[in-house]
Length: 133
Image 1 (spheres, helix red, strand yellow):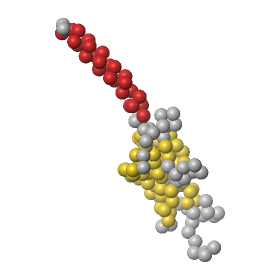
Image 2 (cartoon, rainbow, N blue to C red):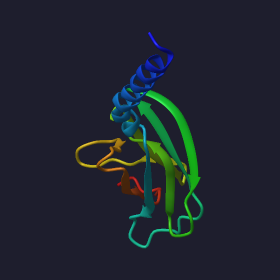
Image 3 (cartoon, rainbow, N blue to C red):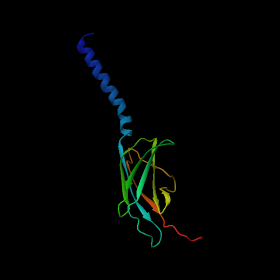
Image 4 (cartoon, helix red, strand yellow):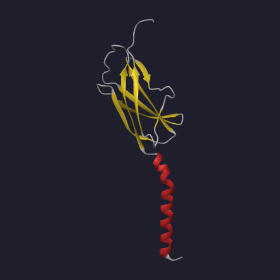
């Protein structure tokens, strides 16, 4: 086989492989979770700078953790997150020695996808009390 024909075949094969891999690469893009920690206690105390923890899950296996500090208004953000459908995230914080986790009515993990690459969440906390009621 002439050398030029082998080069053309190799180039076409490499391009075909790259095109077939493109959907998988699209799933691994980057997403963002941003949100706000909110004290829903009536007349509740100020939040201060809270540490917010993002835990990554691959299916049901916990993986890496990242931390961000919420600003004075309770805002936080995590960038560069996977859009892989098998990857989900939990968002937690500790306020007045109590651990709080984000949850919605339907789920307790945040999922990002190529069609929904960002999520805006509200992480609710409450003041602790010494009341027995």
